[in-house]
Image 1 (cartoon, rainbow, N blue to C red):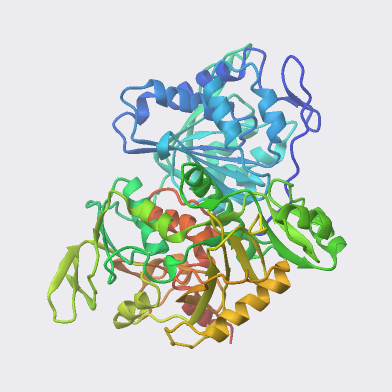
Image 2 (spheres, rainbow, N blue to C red):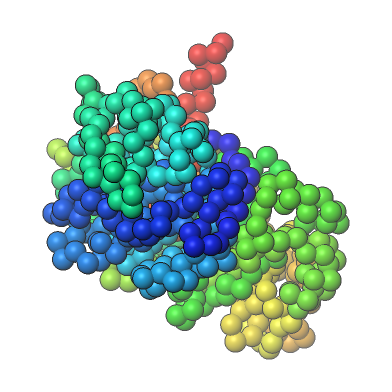
Length: 625
């Protein structure tokens, strides 16, 4: 999927908010919530249809000002028999700015919900934004971009469909037959749909997409609305839902902890095993690490993955830091070179908003960093740093952790996996295993025919904790530096592929200190005692992680998603040097795949990290010869 610049909605505020570019209003005079409850909730048989369900998924084709989402959330909160989780997926090509969203809901009769939505409103950048409310029991999947492009990318099955948008005569692209057919392909068995429009073209389009179309009484001067039920002639069988919600995660670093927490949040019973006696004692044990996005001219899969991951990391980490987790979420600087005008042109070309990224000249960057910066810099306002060990321990809190347990190999026995030690003793039995223990994950996967182009990269960090530092914000470029709480500074890290030396080396400390001088002009304070740690990053050749079901590479496939998989065996590894940035979203992705929940990423980005991607490329090259 190619990303698109996002142009915010242009809204005229009067008695009813209007969109002058489309010559239409956002809702009728009867009121947005009244329309939402009558047309989109009652028209889809809600709240009755979600009762007794574990998860109920709603899909909306036009988010607008968010009134349908707020109405659905309010109905869910008010229903004592509600489903465990409500997932609301919505697409919006022209989302409102934060200021306009606040203004649109200034007189809302549901001010707490409207305020929570405004507080969580993401930067207006292309992508799928996953926003949790009610501790994740209400989840908003908000896709910014074109509806026709987004519908095939959403990995979900919708139980209720809300066809909303400006009138077909004003915005025909949203109501075309191919869009409605794409909606039908996202429909779960027995899904319903509702809309305020009764246009003939719409009704015919729904019928051609496999819906039985009917009418119901209207509201606000409209005599009728359209309701429908998805009843296609043929429904391909889907994968069976898991019957046992039990999994073992091997690895208690960032990747394993993130996956374990996300699975637990899905209602699964999780056991985490690690060869170390406590969590995050290997590479995830550094005192601090950065998280931030990136900007690339082509905005390809790597940049889009990092943008989605950085936004999700900010939403995940910021409240934890505010509650006392060691870290800082007040912005991050990344040096961009001497051509500040070139950086600004790139931002303007991609329509990137200031709450996602800014370009600062050296003077502004120096003022923010508290140290002299000689280059123009990217400033990511939502970036920062956090203690990876503290973050991993937080995620694992309350879960079953077995430390000091080394898994030597895996065996399939009936419908379960046996985790064995070096003497062949069974350590644990479980239907689902997630390998999240860095390079050792590939060793455990190798007997099943799996391999991937990865390398282990040694890294040494340098730190001191004596005295205050002038550095006010984390900074990255050729190396990185961050201020430690209570005084001191951490910098690094070296990058040494194929180096297996675990010992701290003075030459590496000096290398880190020289780069710190170039980055910030800072030097080690006289008499400050140096500390350091050595760890190994696992890095793929495309610098993207590995996340998904383990493929059976002995079989043939015609697509990454359809490659046969080894039942109950999953990978979540190779986060490289971006572990803190990638782990929260990677954990959510792997857990959603295992639990058959709507995925928090578009299909093309899921494919970009699929464990089968290299084998698929080889197969495609062979086919094209």
